[in-house]
Length: 357
Image (cartoon, rainbow, N blue to C red; front, side, top):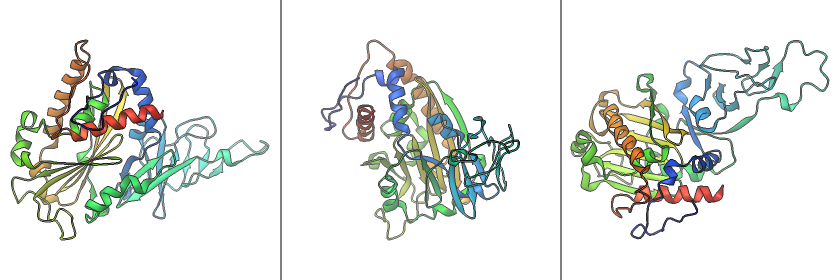
């Protein structure tokens, strides 16, 4: 487990197969998730509700959280009642306060204790411990991110802001019909590996290959993640870039952002598809999709035209790789310096995260 990934990809080996098969390593990596920013939702998911349980974050961190909205202020709170540990909210709702359904304890939408029946004679009550704990929440152009630790959000988001800050993401519409939830028989890191390279596109995604210029596919690395840029083979299926964009003049079909550890933000001319990658155990992973639409008329076109088909193709590959890395005759591979820079970057980050834990 105490291994190094050579910083020069030309000399580097991949992480060992143990990273995909060891529960001990998975638990160490999960500990690192607690220190990271995780995607919550888009603000427009709150147009009709003001309270939302974050089930995908509960599954990721084993910590039940909710988002509340009051007077345009969003707050991330513990979803655990401070009386006896009952979950307070288990579905979206529109309410003036939070009320535990077990014994009736009531909290305001900012998590402050309000009332509790049958507690008139309790001494030293209420105290600050009876409020719901709140956590870090940041709003970047309508996308909400939370962290249960203190860390630098500006460094986390700055690469997106510089590259695609021109998009009116805050105006994208929540589209519940684009919600998907899958469970695959593979380690979470294999799913990320697969996402971080376009090398496999000609071999796995025939239809996607036809709409992208494989030879012009680009990968850029930054501290907290990877950006891949797909160039369209059809100038009608690409972004209308403003002159202020650093990519002005290119026929960009997609911006594929991966933010360590488990958030994938896929920007297409029609809008945004978000993938959240959730380890269940060493060989099972949950994938949660959400979709936010910018231009309805562009749905079904270009690189983001049939995401369900691409997802099924990827799942088949990743599950087969999981079976393969269990082999006693396989341990490590090598990287293509041209095509697998994103995977190399991810493997360096994984090794570093284990050392820090």
